[in-house]
Image (cartoon, rainbow, N blue to C red; front, side):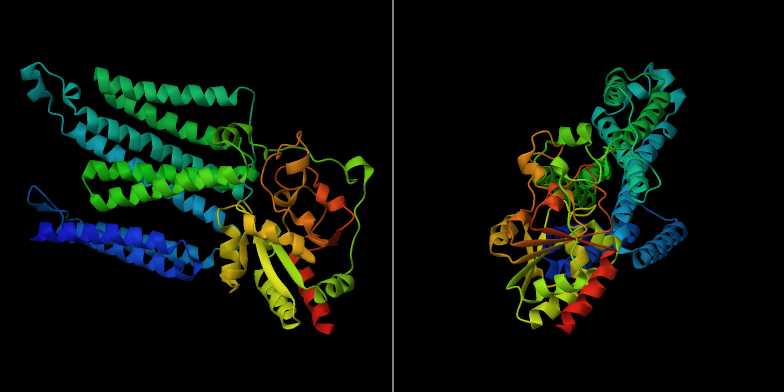
Length: 480
């Protein structure tokens, strides 16, 4: 009866994961989707703790289990409550890394269980080695979980450090070749153990662990900031696959389902992000165009110059426009200006101006970063236009207000074959009648290149912190 109830708990958990993931596709239902999936996970965890049996024995160690659950819940809740929206990508990387570490530890623990179950006397009497009797499929799953989970952990930790500025991009000549050598060596050692079953299996096992850590570090170090959304998605899929390996080891259906969903979703998102930049995944991982390119000087292309606009002029232009499109970028997130931006939107609409938002797939440092940021400020989801829809409306737009975005609005992606972002789909803001760009300075974006848009005749620069600039602009608009 208990076994049937446990199976039901796992089935319920699996269904809630699928339903929750579906609900995440719409911002209106996303919060409830998280709660549904979390409820299913809670049922699966409690079912495992109290109903799981192995050869008639239950888990036990309830004190340790619940102590870990309480500590993890408190730490996770406090971190989630205190994290700023600008630091959300770092938090995602950190939590994803913890998931990879857990999956890798499962492989380590299960391998140690096999080793501790080795009775030399038993195998000496038969003339066989314990390691030669190991099930090949089990060992393959253990190695997959170990390698993928460890790479996800160490890679995510480097991504976390790079996103919060503690770790800089680092690359050296031949690094990609070394990475490939480490990966091939890892796979070769795992294959050797599975096929040859040497007595030195434990030594080789921990060599794989160390090589996987090294590979994860070298894998992420050279990748530039512009490609971080893709890397985060890819590492997320790694964690899902590693968790699915744990589900195979324990024959745990809910763990297997959750891992497959995370792995598949992360893989699909990675492919979509690459498509949004018109680049292959190999190009992202090897090219790393955001990793330290040097910007040109203050003058624009062919000696052009930029022009500034005053707050009063910007307020007049926007107040008497028929349609205004706002393009949020990472600068908006850094300044925590989403709420004042929403206030500006409502004030303009009260004057009869139509206001919408144009969202580029790779704006910010995390997939969906801008959508989450604006949802936090209660911006209506219907006003958030994806890139394709936004590009169709720019021709009929009077004013485009760009807040901290750079590379995703750079016309060089369409016109300059020598540009590192050439071919990347962009928001075609230059088609609007007037463009106002809010930036702190003329410094380039992650790609490290000059933005041709800033020097076009219809473009005006509004320098300053996004939050302060929007507050002053809002006051001017209200005074008209």
